[in-house]
Length: 463
Image (cartoon, rainbow, N blue to C red; front, side):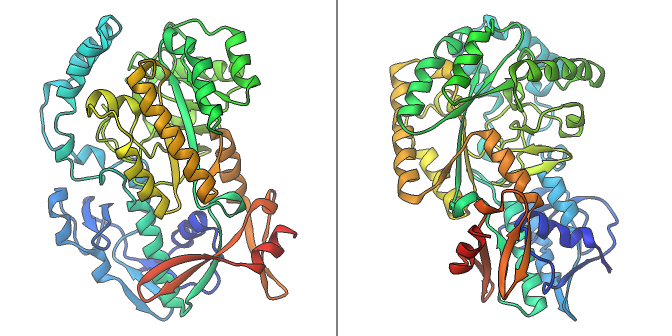
């Protein structure tokens, strides 16, 4: 077994919890093939595990690493490296081993290239038909868990519980996830795919603003449509945000490394021109290993669970996380296009279900609504119903409604804050600490709950 500061660091990074008083995390040396196993009944992991792994996700329940966890001398002994597993999930390294149907013609690079070559000439109804065929197996996917996956969050909570138990403590302070003690965060984003969507932007801003929401607009800089300076100024002048959306939205951004690097240079130039700090790739295509070529502060191209996306996978968390220097702000709800065109649902029932699950875990509620697909009366009616529902929820529960750039700024500030004890109270130090709140993770049996520090939090607000 080995004890590694980096293993305890994943708790500090996630919770911003002081490490003193917690049990150390010790793991077996990683060896053998990576595969699927469990860490409790609700958490499917992917990585190396000394107690065994399964090649197929269906057999992951045969190896539950939680049963092998031991507490000894204030140490937590695990048969796997949680930092490796969390990294594998956040960066979707499990996807290559997650193929329910091999050899599908739609997965052929030539077929995909041909599709994108003619895509703009195809009516939405025809595109929808091909997309439904491609995504027809989405209900058969065992992992990530639909409609929201919390695996990464479950691992962190279970690891903190074990560390608390090993350290003999029942209550541990940490820096709350959102500013001002908000229970959740909500962001709305709009990917502008066509000239018609661009021209619908002012009306969409009216919809959002009338319900107390400001959103970001992801703009395609080349080929799709003209991007006048006045269009960008109009968005910014109303308090909304502009980001870069791919280069030309042709589906080829990540196909070849050399071509990608050339495109990334242009994308970075457009970011400076648009005064944008965020990015989202077209069709949510992504290669997280290549993010080092970007000069953005944050990315929004990774879904929580991607069953209804051409690129399958998902990061399995409802919180932002860092990929090198870039903050990933995941999409945690179903896209409007998928809801309307793939599922044929014109109601907010699925969104309400996802919101309730995320609400219970204090996570990020993030949306994509395309102006291009909100121009029909039926779609507008559904979207306005969503906005009304969100407005009521925000007012009732004091949820933080933010622009993506504000989430980025907060998460970066929180990552630099520290908890210190002064005069018997826990106090947060660091830039922006006046907005932060002290909370406590409380161990009740084998269940972890959160509660605020009350007076201690008020003292911190004035510190």
